[in-house]
Image 1 (cartoon, rainbow, N blue to C red):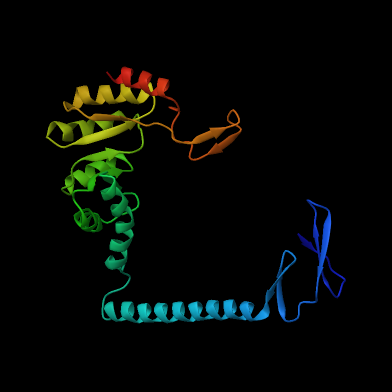
Image 2 (cartoon, rainbow, N blue to C red):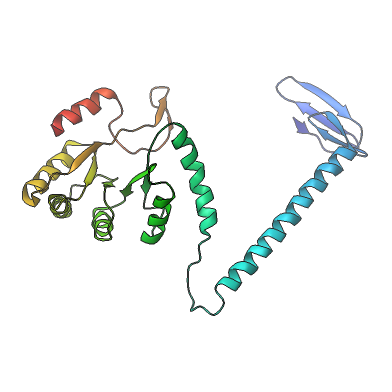
Length: 239
C-alpha cells in the first residue's frame, strides 16, 4: 500500500486491487495497511524497545569495563578473546551434530590462532574431527604445529606445494586435498610420485541450487562438478 500525501486523512492505496481505504488522522491510533491499532499498544511496543536498548547499553558498558580491566597494564596492541562467548557459539554447532551423530571439520580460515583452534577442538573431540585449511602452506604449518587430519579445501595445481604435502604424508601425517578437475588429479599424481606419500582425495561437488535452466543461481560458484555423473567420472579418473 502507498500513502498519499496532501490529505488530512491517512489515505491508503492498494495498487494490486485498485482499492482505497481511508483511516482517521493519525491521532490516538497506529495505522498499518489501513488497519488501526490502539495507541496504547504502540506506546507499549515503543517502551519495550527502549528498555531493550537501555539494557543492551548497560551490558555493553559492563563488558567494556571488564575487558578494559583485563588488559590494564598489558603492552598494546593486543587481541582479547571472550572464550565463554566462543564456547556458546560452538555449542550451536555441536548440539545438532551430536543429535544426528555427525562430525564437524573445523575451518581454520575462520580461526587464525592455533591455540584457539586447540581449545575449540577440545570442547568436544568426538564431534570436532580434523581441520579444513585454506592453502597448501597453511596445511604444512598446521602439521608442523602438531595438528593432524587436515583437508586442503581449495584445489591446486602447484606441484611443488603438493609435493611437500606428499612428503608429510610419507612421514605418517593424514593429509587430504580437494579436487574438481582432471588437472588437479594429474598435478597431485606427479607430486605424490616425487614425494613418496599417499594423499587422500575428496571430490568437490557444487551444492548450489540452479533453477529455470540456470537463469536463477542460489549459492556459491565453487565447483564445475554439479551432478552425480560428473562426480563419478572424476572419481574414476582418481582411481
